[in-house]
Structures are given as C-alpha cells and as structure tokens.
Image (spheres, one colour):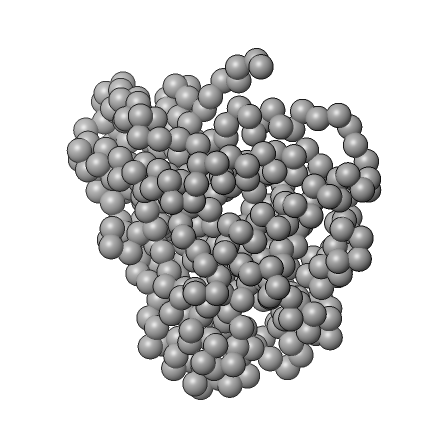
Length: 371
C-alpha cells in the first residue's frame, strides 16, 4: 500500500485517520441499492449501538448523509410534539446552534443560557422544568468543543425524565472517546458523525435513539422532508436502505474504523485520548501559555489556550508554520476571549504531541513571540 503523508490534526474534527481507514474507501463501484450493501449498513447500525451501549430491543441507529449539524436539525425538527416546547440548556456555541434550529423551524423553545466558562446550573434547569410543564424535550450538548467544557448530561437527563420530558444530547465530539452508556446516562437520543470519535471520514452522521419515541413521532408535525427521523427510520426498517443516496465510500471507511475501534478496545481508546490531552495540558503549561477553562470541568479532549500578550503574535502565521510542518491547530470559539484550541481527537498518541510542541516552540522563536 502506498504511504500517504500523515498530518496530525489538533482541530476538533475531522480527526487524524489511519491509512487502513483511508484505503477502505478504495472499493469496486457498487450500486447502494444492492442487497450486499444493505447488509453492510445493517451491521454498521448494530455496531453503532454497541459504541453507545444502547440495547437493541429499545434503541436503533438511523444514518444520515451530512455533517454533524444534520443530526441537530433531524432531532429537533422531528421530536417536538404539537403544542409542546423544547428546553435548550445552553452554555456554548453548539447549544446555541440548537437554538438556531428551533428558530428556523419556528418551534417553541426556552433558551436557558449560562456562562460558556462553566457547566450549566442544575437548579436552574430543575426550576425551568417546574415552571414549564409544556416542555416535552430537553436538549444539551455533551461537550462544548468551542471551550472544552463537559456538561453533566446524566443529571440533566434525570431531571428531564422526572418532569416527563425526553432528553436529547449532542454527543458528536464525545461518542467513542468518553464513556457513554445511554441507559445509565439517561439519554433518549444521542448523535455523532463518523469523522470524530470513530476516526473515519466526513459525510456520514447518525442518530441513536429510542424506537418507541421515533414511532410516536410519526404523528408529530412534519417540518422537514430530507431530515425527518421517522421517515428515514421507517425506510431502513422496510428496506434496510437509506431513503436517499448514501455516502457509499464513507460507509466503507466507517465500517473499517469501527473494526479498529473494537480491536483497540473501548477503555484502551479512552485512556489514549486522555493521555494525549494530558500531554497537551503539560506542553501548554511548560511553554507558559494561559488556558481559560478549569481543568476540573474539561472534557479531556479540548484545551482552549489564550493568545499570548505579545505584539508579534499572529494566529495565522503560527498556524501556517505548524501546518507546513504537518500539524493543524484551530481557532477558538469564545466571542469574548481570543483563543486557539488543541484537541486530543483522532489516531494520535503522546509522541505526536511532543513532536508538535517542538514545532510550536520553533514557530514562536521564528516570529520572535515571547510568552
């Protein structure tokens, strides 16, 4: 097999992939309506449930063609019943995106906004649910990758259930990297896309959720055609196929990535991401950078680093220097603070991080930037 240049991506996804996952896309052409391909998707859907520890008798996975945001669209437009509201527990950019989806579909919502630097206040969530008995859906992103804050979804899900609501969590940047058990974590619906925790390619996203709720949603207002969860689920159940053309090669890559996920082992993979994160934290501290989020509430996947207070600092120039040396860094997503992010996603290990800090050190010297 030809060697492909290896870039180490320290952005929050798409993540660094193995050559075997890249090459899994090189397959004979196949019509996606063949029984053989439907069989591959059936196995893929079953394996995705295992990643979330979702029991097959209660949960299903539904595949969509698109980036992770398609899942936010699908879940919100499909799962809010007539005359009911959705409560978005919002402490960052990705929860704000869910609010924007509500606005686009004119779905009644409560935007329970709090600081991007902190976890949400559970007492405020509980109080809001008490005051709004018409909330049928509670929504919260598991990991705000804009900052690196990990949200207490198990507790938020428990509050939702106590007040008769279902709980949806955007787990795009945690599933397959941080332990998730949908039953223990009180999650009725979660979501991810292939290019993050599974270390596959962009273009395939999926929702994992309760079959009973999807079947009930058949009678909810239909707000989208392409992005309707029940329609896609029903088509899978009847035919084993996606309603519309699937991203064929991406599916082959995802199947290979899942083989590698199970071969590495869930706990070993989680431990690897954790040690990569710890190496990032150590490197940042040793160099003298400041960070913005308390490590106690960080996900262990993203570190938000403040721009140094030096007139020679230029994120673009430092980014380009690192990029030319095989490393990608990423701008921050906090509107009030200038930051960049270093992330522990993908097929990387501690040695990659150590090599990166040598390059970053050289970049600062090159541009005469002092910390």
